[in-house]
Image (tube, rainbow, N blue to C red; front, side):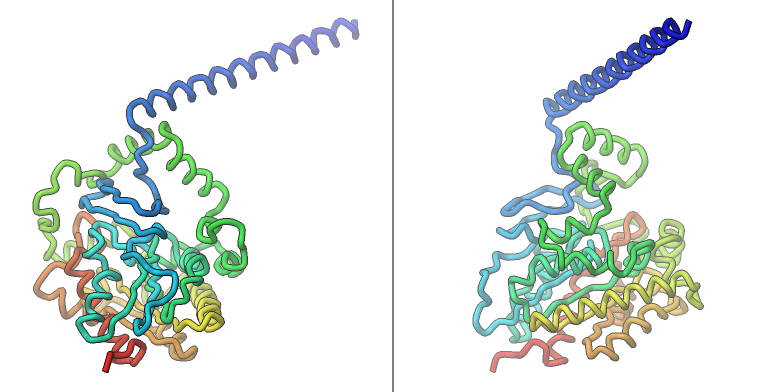
Length: 381
């Protein structure tokens, strides 16, 4: 009896293994067929690239505004930069997220590009390198800095954006600042968790994954790829000057990210995020000093902080105090944006809350005046 039951058990086990093998083989075959079909349809199209290839020209139509990304030999949205610094020019490395990179703006309309133009107009020529990369916070920006410190910048400008706080939630200080010590591959790629790294690889290498995710976003978000439907007069957006309604829309969309910086007094959880950010900022400051670069922190206020005079600026003040204590120049864009935004729209609101070219111009002009006024970039005699 026992022998019979043992044979039946082994037989059942073999049948189960056969069933599992059948389903695995069938699933793999279906995925391979789907991958082949989507590749025949022209995918992947590089629609979710977060790191651009060098010497590329890419038409970006994934959002509400179509724009063109052009990269240099380093894969950055800058003019070609010689490895050795040009004599008589200050070299400035810009690090930050999508505000710095310049989402929804062609290269000449991004804020780092315009900064170089404004410095030149002030008689203070500089080489401005746009190393901004959309998404992430100070951990990714620190890693980007480490990846390009070999260019020997004189000045490093780190632009703080209010959603930088939510981006570091759940990360230890070691995770926020360990990337520069890791020489295995591009440092900024290693700031991602393994699941996010795997997802990013699939979205940029698998035709099926890109096509499916692209289709999901088309159904989920009304403004996604709206640039493909209407690119005429692209920066004239209905409701752009309705600041009160746009503030309400902003708070509705970002209650767990930028809006964290607007609560007053700051909740203990948000204050803890600020503390973590400032500790990481201390490490970035020390790293710059070790490499003979001067760190400058620029504060980019969120939409309500510009158009609502009662909005809290406590986060800004905490960062400014820390910079003062560390001897780090602090450039606050808040007043410049308030002054300029009174008579014209500077954002893509209400469809999106990134800056339009006029908004980028305000940042560039403000920062250029700050750098020259502080004596950080010298005028030619």
